[in-house]
Amino acid sequence: MVKESLVKKISKCLGVLALSAVIGSGICYSKEINPKGHKIPDEAQLDKYLGHRYEDLTDKIGGKETRFDYYIVEDPSKDVESIETTIASVNGKVFAYGITTRSNQHDEDGITIGDFYTIYDEDGDGIFETKYSDMETFDKCMEGKFLPDWVLK
Image 1 (cartoon, rainbow, N blue to C red):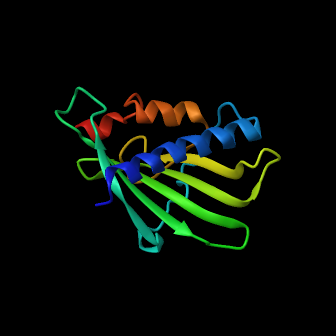
Image 2 (image 1 turned 45 degrees about the vertical axis):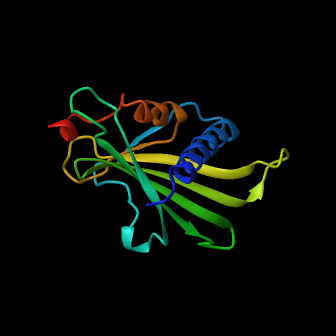
């Protein structure tokens, strides 16, 4: 397990990158449904495991029930510096993937250009049909306001 301070820095970085991506693109809210499911990361191809942390995000289950696992793929292409993936689960049931892509490019303020989105399995069928591309949903997830009912059963 990685030191908690590193995981906290990564978590904060993911939030900053997400906010930068949303502000930079002008997107306030985006929800995309694909009944066949959005492509999810292949865990076997995630190069580096950075660690995990547990959070208590609901009163419906005692203790710190939500696990966040952090991975990074460094230098996947000449245009992309890294792809950071957060896998969210409760009691081993994966319900979301948070994905941040960092570009090798920077805006006029020197901020890394990137993309952030979250893919959810809303009903527990193993198909990650919903894709959110907004900071509001990310914040709700991190506050426990967006845990699907199926993971709490």
